[in-house]
Each structure stands twice: as C-alpha cells, then as structure tokens.
Length: 319
Image 1 (spheres, rainbow, N blue to C red):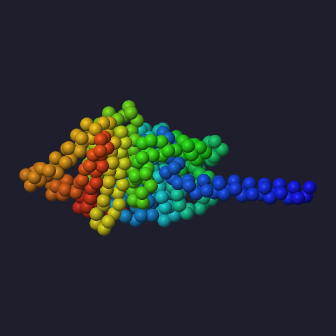
Image 2 (image 1 turned 180 degrees about the horizontal axis):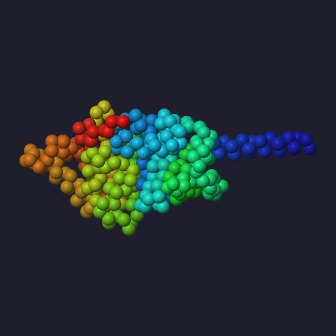
Image 3 (image 1 turned 60 degrees about the vertical axis):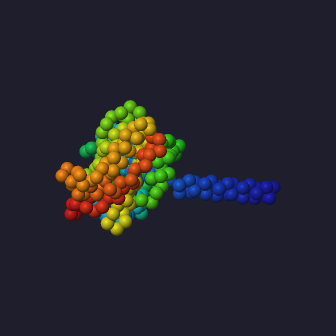
C-alpha cells in the first residue's frame, strides 16, 4: 500500500515538473512581436539597445516620444532592450495603438510608479490596467513581465493575445511571410504592414500608416519610395547601419502584376535616364539616390534595395 502511495506521489511530482517545464518553455517563446493584437495593421520592431544611442535611427522614429513615455514611468533607456510599436487603421486614442516594451526594469517599481501617478486601476480579464485620466491611455504589466502601453483597445488587445496566443497578428497571412523576412531579422529597425481590402485603393494610406510610427522625412529617400509605392496590399522594410551608410530593403506586395510593373518600370526608367540631362531639375543628392536603388519584381511582389547615405538624410536635431 505504501509502495503504491509512494509511486502516486512520484507520478504527481513528475507531472508537476513536466507542466512547469512546458509553461517555462512557452514563456521563453513569448516575445513582444508575438503579442501584437489581430486588429493591428502595422508593426515596427526596434532594437532599442542600438537605436536609442544612434541619432540617425532616433530621427527616423521620433524617438523623443519614446524617451518621454519611459521617463514618465521612471524607466531608464538602458533598461529597455526591445520595443514593438503597432497601429490599427485608426491610430487615435479611441483606436488601436500601442507599444510593448521588453527589458530589465523592475516590474514592482513600474507598478508602484503607475499607482503613484494617480492612474485609475481597472481590471480586464483578471489583469490590472492603469488608465490615465488625462488622455485615457492605458498601461499594463503583462504576466511575461513586459510592459504594454497605448490606447485602451491596444492594451486590451495585447492582453487577449497573451491569454490566447493563437490570436496573434503575426500568426496570420500575410504577416507570416513578412515575419520571416523582416521581424525575425536582427536589423535595428524593421517594419511590416498589411492593409485591409477596403483601404488598398486609397492612394496615400500606406504613407499615412507608416507616418504613425516613423518620420517620413527622417527616412529620407526610403520615405520617398514608400510615398510613391501607391496601393500595396502588404509592405515591409528593414534598415541597418554600416559605417556612414544605411542599407535598406523594402518589399511590397501589390494588388496584381500590372501594378507592380508600373512601379518597377518607373524606378528603373528613372535610373536608365542620363542623369546629367536632368541636372537642372534634380539635386545632386537626388541623382545619387537614384543610382543607389535596385529594383526586382516577381509577379505582384516588388523588392527594392537601396543605400541611404548620411548626406541623403536630414540633419539630426541636437539633444
């Protein structure tokens, strides 16, 4: 009898160990980008350890706003390693907008800071959500230890995904394809966007969505290309630094091969023209920018690679 009881105890202990190991394994796979809610249409993944110290990258992102958000919570920039920013088609305070922060900050200290600032404590599916009375923005410490900040819909959406990971935006096409190419890369900045069908025929919507996260002027020639893409179904890009240059890759899935051919043709023709003939209508930096673009097309998919140079980008504003 005692032998049977001993075996039951060992079996229960083994089962408990396996369950804990499975939970730990699942927890280790949780990253900021896997928590993006399904009603987002655009996602930027930022290696904050690199970006926060680089004035060029900071200018591309309007990083001062991120600094202010962290300072409000008494989080030092060096305590954050990665930030994921997401946006819906409506990025107003009543829409979908948020940021997910991963780092080494003290969860207890951040919670105490949220409480000390007089935020309203509310509950959503058993989680504590802190609401700022001034603008109705929300914050929540996730069970993974990461911090979610944004609109109410944005933060609640992140909590929904943490509870049910199958809801994650990045598990749905076309993000599944873009994720492999961009978000899993080690580039300091990467971005993915997929427009709902009803917005794919709106000319400047892609540029407007990108501008909710980035400064188009700060992106220099890359911002110009994004603006001229027109009507993409999906778009993604990444940027890195190599000395005084910033190699960038952009991939756009257009609605059909004809649309992709038009964009590809326009850029290739511009490169093929004798640029000296346009010297009176084009600045030297614009001529150099065209030389630094390579365009490839496979059906409806465009792949554009370019080298951004220091002189192609606006001067960063001194701190």
